[in-house]
Length: 461
Image (tube, rainbow, N blue to C red; front, side, top):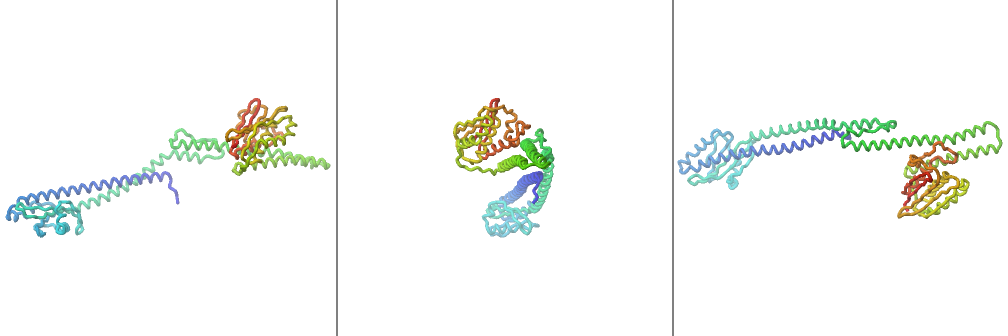
């Protein structure tokens, strides 16, 4: 089923609303016209009854009564569509207008229920295909004889007028609804032109034009939040595309070095005959490059799992104190080789995955050892504050410029891009730390001064 456009919907709503208003207006107008005709008929019938009653009141003798029919005829001459009938006490017709068939329905009802025909109430009915309005009242002559006078009007011309009026009104309402829909379509299309302009601009967006932004000046108030939100989304997409491009470039760069080393070593080994020890040395060197690439691929897969929410840490109680001590034992030889000492203070226990948390701490401690000058100390402090556990890893060293701090946890990011010494890693360690901490519902922050750099983990205790 095809969905109506916004312009078509608003135009249709305009037409429906206009039709309802016009129909309501037409209904009340029709009622007013009908009430006007009814009041006019009531006034005319009452006038005739007053005239007839006046003639009856001046009838005092039989001679006056014999002249009364002629007086009634003379009084009713020229009243087209008017019929009068007078019945005596026995219900027989004593007088009826000539040349007009009196509506028999009113007389029959008066004979069947005399009480209903003496109140002077206006009644309407159809007889022989014609419409009538009539009244019946009781009168007495001046001598006291009772009579019933019934007066009726042929209102067929009123009915014809009302039928024509209703048809014309219905046609006018239909044409007005159509005109309203057309005008509504034109007005709505004009009013939605800013939205079409925004749509055209959005349709022209591409990966190569993510730096462009929708103009917010001159837009209607309803569209400004949409344009602002869309511009914010473009900014996020632009940043993501830039990071993805840099990520792809970094992957190619990181893989090119070990692959180039492997190719060079292999070409050298094949260039001339060599002894077993020389071939072993080449293979050991190649193995180191393979291990480096395997580590990089494993780290990238780990981060991909984190991006897709596949890291589901357990909720076992993990003693960060014991894990830190074990890591100090593991790194002791390397730290002594670099002339770096390790120090730990405080205790903390958190719920989580022991291997994941150990990996995060290992990355931070190894990173701290790598950047600590000879003769200095790497300090790890643990503390619990309320429902939070705080882990701080601090190492002396040169200050990291402030512009680099927000990006330290980006993948393959290095403060010094030219530093590619073997063993420095691929630049994924801090990104993995951040993924592990966030998977445990925590956060990580970094601060650097001219004396030291401090990483702080906040985990639910």
